[in-house]
Length: 260
Image 1 (cartoon, rainbow, N blue to C red):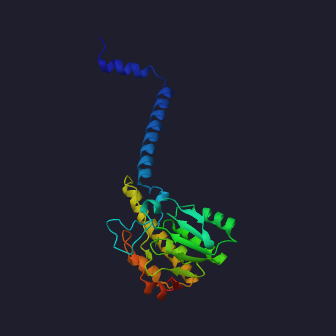
Image 2: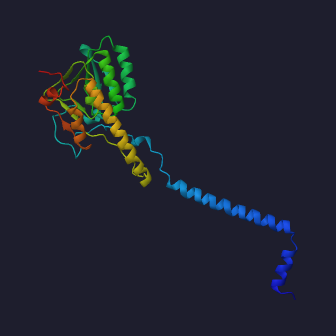
Image 3: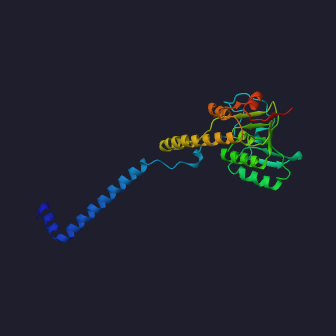
């Protein structure tokens, strides 16, 4: 009976040399493809993840009753009203009332209302915890372009990015007991984000925050407001507010006058 070794030799001899070479070639090709795939997968895992749009620095709408908030002037507008998206209405005496949170896209809605009622508007009355910086800047520039005044009444809130809208007024009137305040830019990182995305977010957010700081500083300068207003924001953690006293408001030219 042939041995096992002999059987293997006879089996291999039955193949032509070309068939053996082709089998070896395709085997090596398959192994190479697997190795390349594994290398690609490993390298791909090391690349920084795309930065989610929600990591763009923002000035979040602020709740003055939050645990980190310092006591400020009394606010009579309910927080559930202030948390709602911006509501814009033309009131009596040419006052365009702007109440609620400045959301992305709020500037477009504001521009529509201005276009509809421009001939009647004299003052833009603000009551907002802030929100989108880009929209606040756009609203403030439109207010200045149209020559409208701005106001913040006693019991109203103008915080976070809202003072940027207020700064756009050709005349800026505040009550001595009004709540006008600022704080730092903030960038939220999703809880389920990876370490790679968090590191990417940190670098991108810092760069964007510096660019935004330059834009806001230039804007306030163009509006005739003292740059210390934004320095106060930079010095104040995002979970707190730095309120401007009546003396601050006039000294820093954020308010051109105080109401009676």
